[in-house]
Image: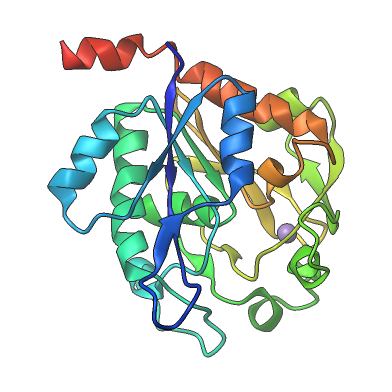
Length: 251
Ligand code: MN
């Protein structure tokens, strides 16, 4: 049995007269498949009981990229440069992130996902890097170049971190498609990577189990631009076991 990995969906709008779609970019699915997992898209359902039923079937949770988290979730007033928010998605991802950490279910957050993880556990965010951090780098450069694989800035990895161990280097270049970032770190998380402007670019859980968030988009790099990131997805999926845990719960 392959581990069943839930990928939290975003809301996508195409035509004005069409209802929105729930889904996510193919690269997330590709990365989980390559790592030996069975990907399953999790829509942002509005009631917690149904959400819990979906969550219980998963062996691991991938919190995927997307728009901004509503600042009410971390006790802040909206900044004028706050981007598009998706309260329904917030209301699905925040509890799932808390459940995963509390129950030792492996969780990997990517871009918005590192922010969801931090907010879910009690941390805060910069709502707009360019207007809130002096002399910040261009963290939305890969987006502006319209190239997910554009390497925008360097990462400095913390000694002794799982991420540094996996990647096998102290520094590497990454893509960057974000205007928000981790501000105050939540209890239970530690920063393990920084951009040259000291913006936090990765976090890990301080306890047992796989809890990790990255601000870059490794799912867009692992397929060719930087295959070293395959090791992150492999470690994540491996930590999700063989599905036996899920079978045991169902019995
Ligand atoms: Mn960045």
